[in-house]
Image (cartoon, rainbow, N blue to C red; front, side, top):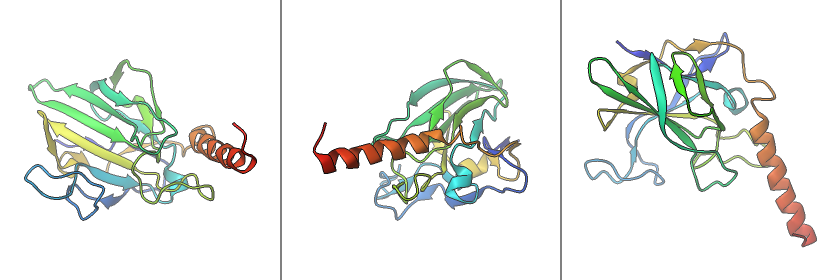
Length: 196
């Protein structure tokens, strides 16, 4: 049995894989489990344009789950905000889903199937980087999965033809990108005027 994608997509949208799990030529990626110079520990997904993707709801694809690790979104580009949720299946298998580059994380609680746990963002090591012209640039979901503590290919465990349907992100959902833009503009103004 495969799980549905944790993404909420409006009617007419289809998820697009932009980077697969495994050996990578991207120099920013860490080393692989068998000494590979660069390895991508997940699958990257977009929903069309960066603007369509930013702020999309991320929902729990398991019957139940709880947050066991997270890094809150920051306005710095050095950290990659993520949420990791644990689902201990009845057969004893331990699933840990990692949703990275998120713009928001819901408060920790016991989640059930379909609950919103986070929203898609573009913070951290994303390409292309967001900028003043396009604060939504680089928005995507990095979907990682560990099974019994080992990183696995999400495409083997998630059905990429099934996802949650619902409304497109609203202006409110996309506010963190606007806040990033305001922060950047203030920094430029301070630099020009020499004020603190």
